[in-house]
Length: 119
Image (cartoon, rainbow, N blue to C red; front, side, top):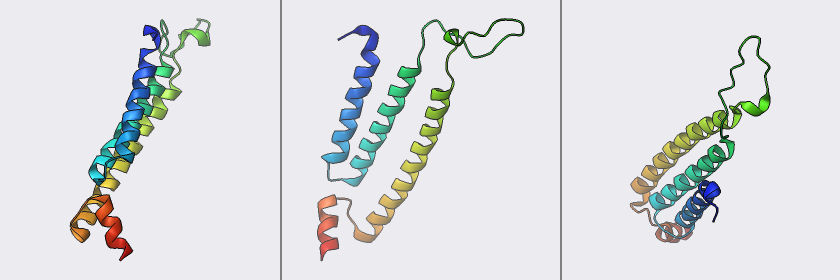
């Protein structure tokens, strides 16, 4: 494993943990935590992908030539900031739904909920 690309391997491992957390547990809150881990893995991957060694902030000084290779691209960081906001919103809505499910069915076990809905 190359030490230069360790962040990609770690975000991939985090993604696999999140997928496991969504698919395996029967408890809805654990599934929600797995979804959040997957979202964090994707955000981490994109931020690591956008990293550029030896680059500066994209502020062009008057009278200096603007070479794109010497600047950091701010677009991936802005997109990931938006992804974080969407992740928090999704988590809030999902938690509200989990609360409603718990009040109505008095359980958060997926198998039990499916059995009740089939009746």
